[in-house]
Image (cartoon, rainbow, N blue to C red; front, side, top):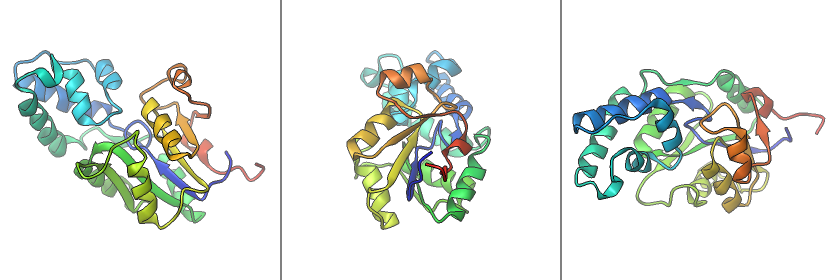
Length: 217
């Protein structure tokens, strides 16, 4: 891949395989409320726009359900307590980040996962390589708005020139477009290539180490 100075990563489905823990917390909240549980495949298709949207899609009638706030709060609490039980970096991710840091690149995470969980996961798995991790919070517009990416760039003290956004979803493609930076779409996450192409993806990678700069480009 072409070399960049700044690499901004999505979290779920890009750096971390969080699907089993998301599914477990989703179904804990649904089960506790007496609602039908969701399959792992359903949850995979629900993620990408933040956990509130995940639960809106998982709960019958979504936001119109009178129990929505209660079930959503149950999900958040369970996920904060159990979100590390099955979550792991994808194979090659730690090596990728270590090499990019060794090369002096600027690294950040920008996620639609709620802020506390984003920080905790980043600190747990990537404290040696990534110091800036931005999650969803009320004071800033979430992806695909460019605001969280721009906040990450501000905290890194760099501009968007020579920056790339790396993610696994249509939301990530739209985010990069709104930031006017390129997007690398990864194929080990929650969406396949056909779906990503339909949503404007043009640059695809099958393994994290393929994201390392190619000195011949």
